[in-house]
Image (cartoon, rainbow, N blue to C red; front, top):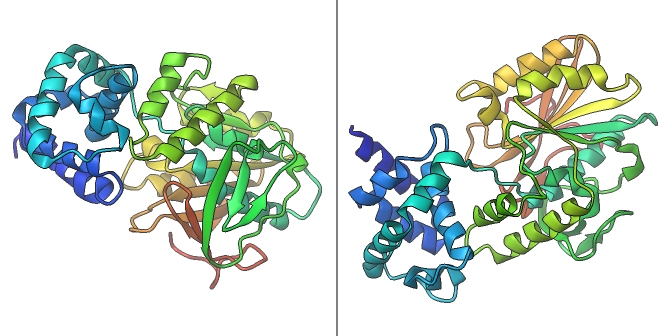
Amino acid sequence: MTEHAKLADVFERFAIQQAAGKSPLYETLSRTVARTPELLDLAADTQPGQPAPNMLLGAIHHIIRRGSQHPLATYFTGLEELPEARAGALLTDFCRRHAERIRQTISTRSVQTNEVGRCAVLLPAFAALQQQLDDSHPIRIVDVGASAGLNLLWDRYTYDYGGHRLSLPASDPDTELFCEIKGGTPPLSLDVARFVRPVGIELHPVDITDHEATEWLVSLTWPEQTTRMHTLNRALTLAARTPPTILAGRAEDHLADVVTETPPDRHLVFVFSWSIYQIFGSPGGRERLVDTLAGLSQHRPLHEISIGHFGHNTPRMIMASHNGGMSRSDVVAHCDVYGTWLHWLAKPSGRAPGGRENP
């Protein structure tokens, strides 16, 4: 298979598996790129390891959000659907006019989505962990693959679980996350004061004081996702007031340091939100993560909360403990990639039904 054919297949699969039913515009544009050699040539300049559809469409969205008056921009408002018959000519013309800007963007930037909505499914996991750790010791969260660190601000948001509104002491009433409970009874009661000194780890942290960097973050949201875009902008505003702490560099270089420098009287929990395979590779990334944390647990007990597909169609949340070189993991929930729904599987004790499960 030629490189063109491989890239065309990537765009076709993106249209079918990701955009269909969620973004009619991106579904149409992805199919258009897949059958247009000139556009495939442009998309081929995406950095190795980065998803070409997200990068190319994000770059186009970025230029349009910065004020482009091209006729294609009309369809990014969500008010009018792009006819398949017009897509080829409009997209090709737009990309010709902005080829250098697109090429510069996709060859230097990366996909660093910071999905704030996932905090709505992480909060019950934090509550469940606190129930398990029934002492009074502080809990430190380490968000691995933190992007701009917005999920470290989970205690600043307001939550709505199917009509049950949850406000925390520092919640911003205008930054509200909505999550439907599809099953089970997730724990929602927790003592926020026990969660101290959160920190993120990110290879290339997004500087929230850099307007261009945050604009790129917003441009990576899909045009139809207006609520998600609004929430992201609100979260960025909150973060600008009190920026989260993020360690820049490879996760593998920082994990041991965080374990060492965290006081022994604090529980340490590592959070991976769709970031395991970016850090530890695929296939086998989850296994390599477990081996890494098990090795570090020779020095102290460690906890883990991970969300991802893990080879399944429906995303799942894993809670794991690592102690003395031994690891135990349980699937405690199924959830949506954007955090819009949650099916809690774990019993009130925090243990998954049936005990240990293979994720």
